Image 1 (cartoon, one colour):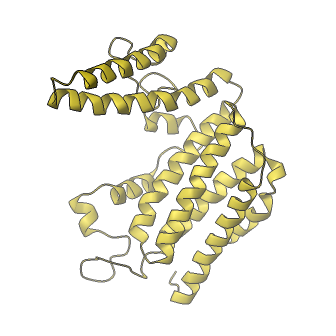
Image 2 (tube, one colour):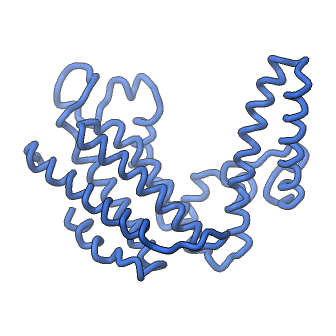
Image 3 (cartoon, rainbow, N blue to C red):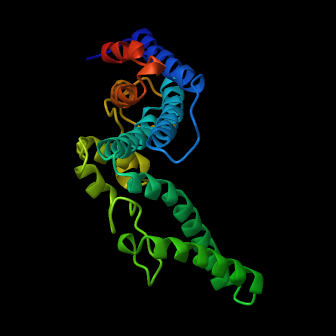
Length: 253
């Protein structure tokens, strides 16, 4: 379906209004900051809302390629949220989920320090920091020996689900397994000759180097869909937030 510039702007602004409604409901709520299923879900939803703000800004200014690449982030957010929702009775899962934050931080520190240690081998301070990071990682490896490679202190990206878990494996255990849209979004996120030649809208010849009015409807549609799905899941957990009022708007959008 072809849309006029005015119609597309109206649709994009409607998305922006829906996002702001959700943000206001979350920001005005009283959320207890502790290691609970509810707090984990709110953190995920808040991150999704931030990404939706970025998508809205890109769409409003005519950048569908960037908006589509960010859509992947919202999809991954939904997969994680859905997995936690389906396994919310597993208290150990929530503890692992929060511990994964510290594990990820120490892994990144170790990678950085390993690079400096290799390129500055005589720097004793760097080696001390590297040893400290590895000791911190070792604490989690000892705590979760069945979820990582203890000898190498290796944790997969989604180790908190199971040892060696990848996003593809995680998504297969949810109501939202990966499909063609994920591949399309990934092609927009990663630099390649393909992404440099094929745009969401290829009806006009030439090389795209700025804003466009073409192709906005695709990332708009799928982003609104993801926000709707996520909001419905959140509404099931936190009905007092009053998010049900905006779900009908998502469906119309």
